[in-house]
Image (cartoon, rainbow, N blue to C red; front, side, top):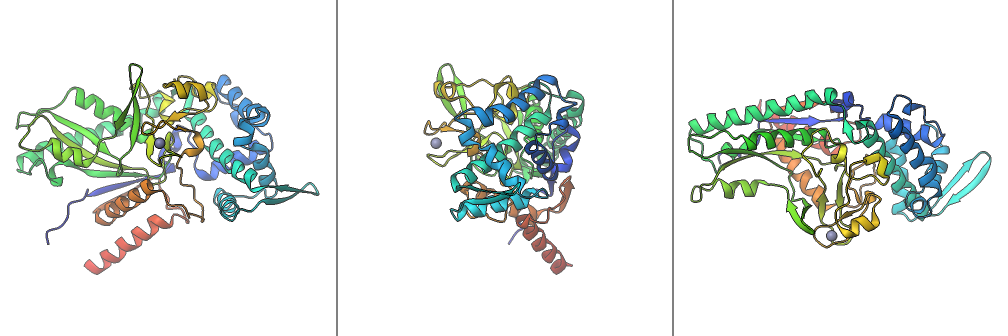
Length: 413
Ligand SMILES: [Zn+2]
């Protein structure tokens, strides 16, 4: 049987790759959450004043005094749970919260010589609060001034995206001259794939913007058609597009579209596509609580320095430029995104972040599909590049794939 074609190079993108931007790895995030729970905001000293005070207000006022928010995101409950163990790491904390929730159990806290019991509902709300804090901390860390990321720090990521795009154009020319058929993987699939274990969309946003530029000024191939570059997320994701007052559904591109567009019977343009996967989920993505579909929001403008790509914040000053689009979103605010399929409102806690927890009972179909795709990519890669990804001890999923690869390699040699 002929060998199946998969990208030669797979980049495993991890927290180390975005550290220079100020984004925190999990080990730092838990330290910050511990500090916040002790009312220590010293880490905000170098931050833009408006952002710093908005974040402080979120934690000390909104999450405590707002009757609605404090119920959904129970900071007091989280504080109580954390106060019982000053050495919590993120993994232990999430595993414990998940185990309590899965078993419908409350939490008995002993702190300052007193006993305090939290019902399971409050444990759930504490977990929501923890996820919210992680998201808000990362959104805060990426902003230099409200709504904007640091241009100088972002430059290397943009340049990286540019080089990748240039290489993909060069590849197209080479593959065309070798006579590869346009509607086959050998031609249209990029020779690289990126698997991001980060929740931040920085690398994706830079690649998107570069592709947008390339597609606006396309290279023409010998077949007389313009070449266009796109990305495939390994699963179908929808977003809402706004057209006048109507909310219309939009889909991210995928490989099957590429095959149809490159069909020789209907020549219009030539498309190439690359795999960019987020198996741990991404900020701004949601699973609709009603219909179960996977949705995502992208920034309204093609501004590569806009922090909007991190999705809406529950507090306006922490995502200054975010505009709620539909009447329902405008009514609910607080991080609301309307599901383009069924119209249900989703909130930040409908985000599908995979946190390193031992309790992974609930399988999310969209993420399961990504796992399969990730396995195939890793298994078939000729080169694997570790870009700031340190293979955390509990990332069993990736370990399994790499072990398999290693065994195959030994067999071959
Ligand atoms: Zn829905």
